Length: 249
Image (cartoon, rainbow, N blue to C red):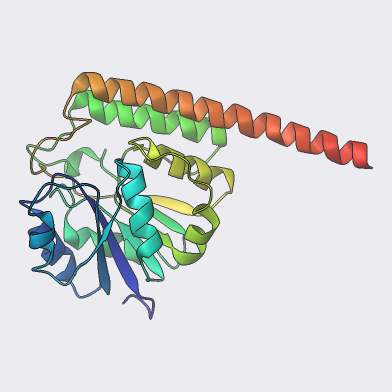
């Protein structure tokens, strides 16, 4: 628990069988996590058996996609503070305290992997990925006039229960752009948030997206278009609402 609030950890899994047990144990080692929800998103054989050796609870999402898995995990979690991470070894369990430390003041506390001093040897965050995430984040920050954003793709974040209830029915994207959509809705409805630098280490296995530079570039481009589309839809939507109110008056 944290300040008398229960803490749930949500881990979506697909290709993390060989390391997921260690990751769960590492996050639970500090005694702050009350429950771990692992969402099996058509994961490789043997994943459930590894998770069963821990205290984690397994749920399932058949629709293939990072976003679908996270949404399912969030919907099944019972905690008042919801922490999302990936079980591939890139994030360090000790960093959960960084997110919790700001949980009383902010509705969402997001990690950022673009702090150079916390990118460890072997991490999948080279020059192009680091600056790509940074530039897409700054594009969103500029258009929506948000607090500082420096990383569009960091999974590790904390959402309080009230903020999640405001967001949960708005999500429509289940693929790797989900984090972008999450931040967009967070900006549109003006949730209070802050970014905190977290450690970023080498992962187990190869990422199905950022492990390929062409796929990573395409994902970044699609995020740019998604941000622009949401911005224009939001602007014109507000204009229509104002016009309807004026006609009603």
